[in-house]
Image 1: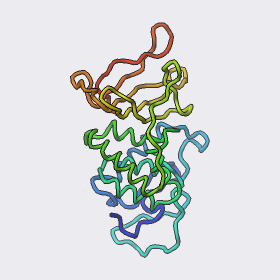
Image 2: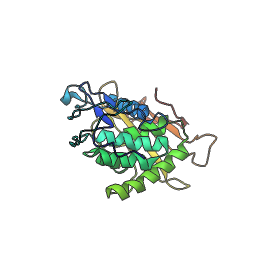
Image 3: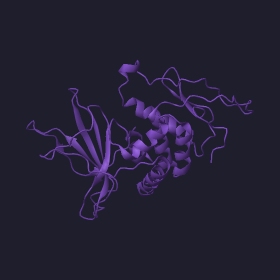
Image 4: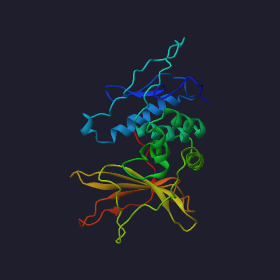
Length: 260
């Protein structure tokens, strides 16, 4: 567990350039800090920051980098990291490192919106809240069965630590069966879908097409549907243009493409 020397804004902060910085590279094992920064950069790249000068707002607090011989800590409380994205990244780190208790505890200690962001990854499907968690599921190297177990564990931790929990939902579609986005921005939805062998986790990625229109890019199913030969777990179904100009077509199951 983290020692008592860590308080709000002392582990991570956003600098004037919109970059996530850390004060102690040894705060987490297994290169956890660098992984959190990597997921932050990936998430920022998918979002629109036109209202904030093209980058996330900096953390409003004086930051001192920890040295090998720490100086006496200032007893004055630091302002919290006022960004839910920190909580999103910590939830993702909990899945990747298979240590959700430590990451949940850190989210709570960070204060501000970090705890809300941690909970939001598991409970809301709006404004790209699941981007960080889905990027870990898609790009992680630890195997998806293990990752899904960690998500279930995170849900229970979130319920106990932050006092809220919403049941999972099916990804939304209209009466004609067409996919519906949550917001008019690129984002990732996560939910469940009923199958012949029970419900399974499904993710849907949204992005802009060549005309700047928000469209579904692909569905990701975390199951083999009982047919592993043709449906690896996980697998994806890409949305492709309809030759007749109508609704996008749902492509066949193919092996999941990892993000670059």
